[in-house]
Each structure stands twice: as structure tokens, then as C-alpha cells.
Image (cartoon, rainbow over the protein chains, first blue to last red):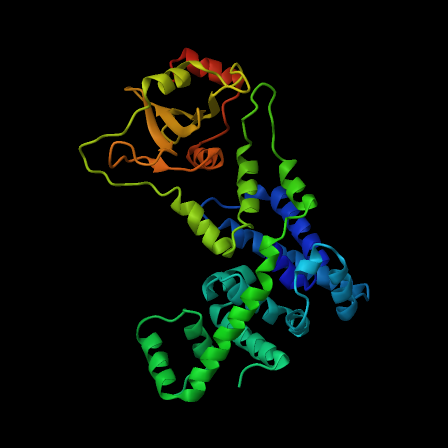
Length: 147
Length: 237
């Protein structure tokens, strides 16, 4: 959960805030979780919904999340955060549109199948597939990899 | 015959099967450019996985674990009674830990709970031995000494309405349900006993309680309900 949160938020501190909100909401809505379904997918769905709401709210307030470069510095200051390598990948991920970033994270980092990832995100599998490809290509271009 | 970028990605991520998979594989074999793209996709995946992996190794911040810990409901005199719903959430927290992410962890925890359904017909269900059976028959959670070697962890009813009890007897943990013959073992962390036992394997109190939580219908028995159940010989209805 932290990994997905930090990946989404692009910043360890924001990621942990997101994690905390997700756990709180999941606990308060625990009766909505259906037995026999995957608890992790359910939690991830909650997390991305919170993240989307939060992003919109911040945009309305005219704030961005911690400024990209400042954010990286802030992260590197903390004892715990320092362990996470902050570099090209975070910067590149931060440039991706939200929907591409979450597709890349769910499939390439969290290892979900396209179908599972599409269910979490709430889009058709084909859409997830093309978001993934676009996100992947953008990442490769930003990282100077690929053909 | 062209292969789209989407198809290539799906192939690289193991999403394709059958004829589709073969078609893409054949195209890649013929086309160096496709092969290079496949390689690039895989390389990126490896790099991303490596980049995010350290997060799993980091200690989880206290404020997150406390959210979960604070929800554990300890009842007076029944130190081991765990709120079922809370146990569920705690499992969610544990699943953050393994290096292969939740997918693998969930699969692993489900594997631990898979019923060993080797119904060989002959050997029926296993039953608890005299000593454990006696504890299950007589001991209530409220009365047992807190540091006792032989402890009942949880009492509950299963789908059939039988009374079941999770226990830990000197490190040997399990779950048994009372039927006409005695305390029938439903789960144990002792591996296979007597060959192909048909009960489930578990590894720790946590797992035992997790299995108990899955078997249980309704709330765990409280102190009064335990005494009433004992009076009824732990027999269903």
C-alpha cells in the first residue's frame, strides 16, 4: 500500500498521508468490503479515489503538490525517505498524466493483471492497456531508454 | 500482419494466451525491432520494480501501524478475543510487507488456508487428543490464567452451528469443532499428522485466528456465552 501510495503521490510524505487516509476510510467502511473479494484491490480502489479527490481539491485551492524539485529535496532530507532513491524515475513518473501513472504503477510495479488493474481503476481492459503503453512510452522517452 | 504496441505490451506482461500469444511471439521472432521493443518494455519493468522495492523494506511509520493497532478490541478477562473485522484489517497491514507485493502475499495466505481435500475415504477426520480435548471441554477464556501454556484463543460457531475453539497448547496451535465424537480438528500448525490428514495447516496464532475468522459465523463467544456453551457440553443446539 505504501508503495502504491508513494508512487501515486510521487513523494514519501504525501504517500504516507495518502496511506493513512486510505486506512482510515477502509476501516470506517469495512462492512462494505465483500468477503471473498480481494482486500488489496478494494483498498487500492479507495486509495486512488482519495488521491483523485485530493488532487482536485488542491488544484481548486490553486496549490500544487509540493513543488517537484522542492519535493525531491524535502524527501531526501528525512531519515526514512532518504532510503528511497529519488532520481530520474520519480521525476519522470511525476510528469505522466495521472491515469497513465496509475496504470504503470499497478501493472509494472504492483504486478496486477490488466483485468485487475482495470477493475481498480474502473475502466475497460483495452483502455488500461493503451494507457499503460502511452505511459510506458513517455517514461522511456523521459528516461532516454527504448528505441 | 502488424502487431500493435498494445499487443506487444500485453505479450510482455504475460496477458496473452493461445493463438494470440503465438501470433505475437512469431512476429517478434521475425522482427528485430519488435524484439528490441519487447526487451525495452521488460527492462523498464525491472527498473521500476527495483526502484520501488526499497519502500517495502522500510519500517512502516508508527502512525500507520497505530491506526490498525488501536482498533484491536481487548475484552476484560478475555485477553485473546480479537474483533473479527479488525483482524481482517490487520491482515491487510501485514500484506504490505512481503517483497513481492500484495498479489503474492494474498496468494500465499490463501494457500495457507487451502483445505487439504485428500479425502481418501478411509481415515476420517482427526480428533484432538485427550489433553487438548480436556482443555477445550473445560477451560473458558475468561478463567484461564493469562500466561497459561495451554490457552484457548477464541470460541465461535461455524456454519453448521457447531462450537469451535482456536487454541494454543504449549506451542501447538489449532482449531477444533465439537461434534458427537469429540473435538474434531479443523486446522493445526503441526503439519500432517497420521498421513493424509484432511485438516488445514497453519503457522502461528495469527494464522490460526485468521482461519478461525473465516470459519466463524457471527461474533466470538463472550465469557457468558462460553459458560453457557460449556454447560451444554459444547453441543450445537
